[in-house]
Image 1: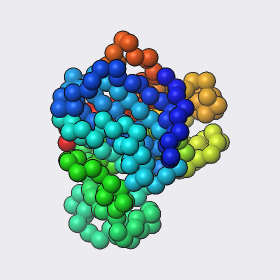
Image 2 (image 1 turned 90 degrees about the vertical axis):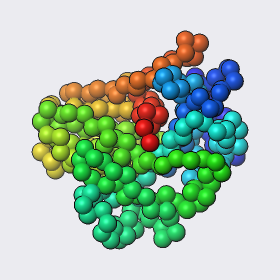
Image 3 (image 1 turned 60 degrees about the horizontal axis):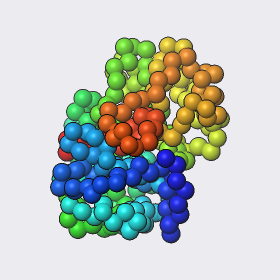
Image 4 (image 1 turned 90 degrees about the horizontal axis):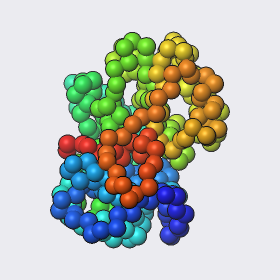
Length: 278
C-alpha cells in the first residue's frame, strides 16, 4: 500500500496498518534508522507481521525518531521486546582480539563526532567486532522506558552471511540514497561498506569496481538484492545486463490475509531485525 503523507519532517512511503488494538506486551517493536529514512515493524513472537511503516526523512536521526513517535503514538508503549538498528558508515570492523585498541582515528574518518556514543557488536562467526557510534542527540531522543541493545546494520548483514560455495556473494541492499554492500568469497569477508548513489550508473560503477579489484567473476558470483528495488526499475535492468545470477532476498514473517501483500525483499532488514535474539 503506497501512501504519501507529509508531517513536519517525514514522508510516509509505505504503510501496512493494523486494524485491531495491538497488545504491546505480547509484541515486538523493531525500528531501523539511517540517512534519509526511518522504518519500523511490529511483530509477534510467532513472527506474524502486525504493522509496518517506512518513511523518507530529510531530518537528523534524532528528529526523525521524534517525528515518528509523534505520528505513531502507540509506538511509545511498553513492548515485550524492542530491537533498534542504526544504518550508518560511522563504524569500524576489527578482529575481536584487537577491539580494545585505539579506534578513534578510524571512527573520525567515518563521520564520528567526539560527543557520540560508541558501542560495539560481536560477530562471532567471523571473529570480528563492529565498533560504531550512535549520534548523541539520537541517544537522548530514546523514550524513557525503552530498554534495548542497539545493533548496527552491517552487523545484521554479517550475522546472516550465506555460504557462497567459493563463487562469491555480493549482498546489495538499496536504501533511499545509499547502498549497503557486503562481499564475501569462500566464507571470507572482503567488503562491508556503504556508498551514496544518485543513479543506476553509480551502483554499477561500485559493483564492477569491486569485482575487478577482488577478481570476482560476474557470471559466477551470486548477487543477492534487498531493499527499495523492483524488477521493473532501471536499476534492476542495469544490474541484469552485467550479472548472470541475481536473487531477491526473502523474508520469513507472516502477513495477515486482510493486509496487502508486498515483495518480501523490500523490508528484509526489518525482518532480520525483528528476529534478533538480543
